[in-house]
Length: 461
Image 1 (cartoon, helix red, strand yellow):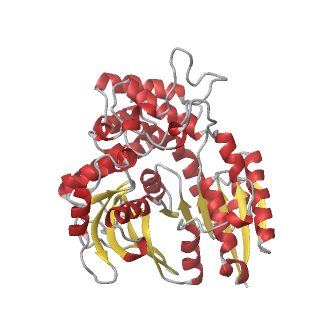
Image 2: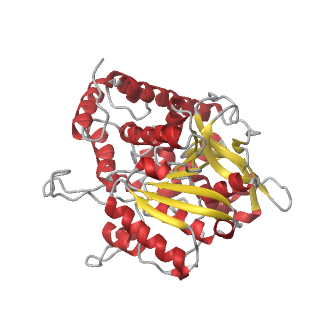
Image 3: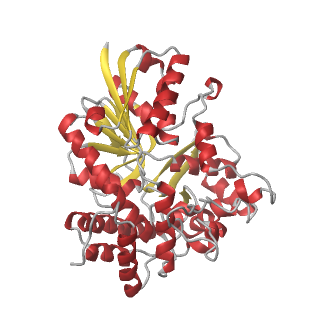
């Protein structure tokens, strides 16, 4: 049998690492038609050990014979790999809370602060070093392997790796599938009943076509009718901005308010949970000091801890992780992510269609640069992964918004390569949620000091 090596980099990641391992364990072909090796790598020895023990228990329970091993050595994990699945973050919520709060203290109206807005630029710069370290190690020890990325900011990092290295990289995100679910709720149909075309920037995409698979009928007229009848406040935090953007641009966006809203200046009016993001009491708490807690991450203003009684227990991050790593064979199911189907398609030379991937544009979306990382439908087979050209053009205003982000991508790469605060300032001042010039300069200085242990060293030039 042919050998296949898959390296999971950032294997301590709870969601993506465990999801990928479950998909591998459930794959008949990967466990019967190849000699499978799985390398689990993380910089945290305790986290990778935890994942290794879970994986061994799961593969043993399914009588799988794959060779699974753990390491903290990147080169060892990647040597001879055919595919690297990457999901990396260091102290994610600790740094994300800084990305969110500091720009807002200096006057930015950003929401969320993960993939768009000034906060996302520091997020990008933090992750560029380790992402490029992985890609350059791949150039050395597995130059023909595919780099399958789940790390955010997705588009910015995919573009950086594709421009600064020779490695084949694809970014994966389930945001479009979240949008399909919303369409189905409005249409009162099942996902398998509708066809669609959509794309744009990761976390800022639009459905340009929606149709009934059985009849071929355009479903946008029905969607328009249903959307107008729907409760105005239903799922407000998640889709109120999406509904407004549909009215503005004529196409329904995905994946939801706190993602799409990162790229526009008017999102705050549609995000009731904004004041809850990493909420803390400044009288009682000193943020980010030794021994202090990281404020709780709140996705939106409904559900979870917000619906609890005064003395009800709220599940902590530690409890959630413990629960995730408590193995139960009856709960092992497909993750619905694309990494393993893509690996199977490329390795076995099948041909599959993928709802959304992030790759350099190369003409797939009209009006956007060829070298910009965009998101749309794709085909994967033995030759690799290729975007499917969109047949409908996105609205001029949407293309203009994405163009701004494309220019920000370029400026961030220049800031990284040149070690320049000035180029970072140019990127921040271009953003729709930028603070003033003086505030932006002070914000850059504070963030570079606050995150100096993890950000690349930048100077004013």
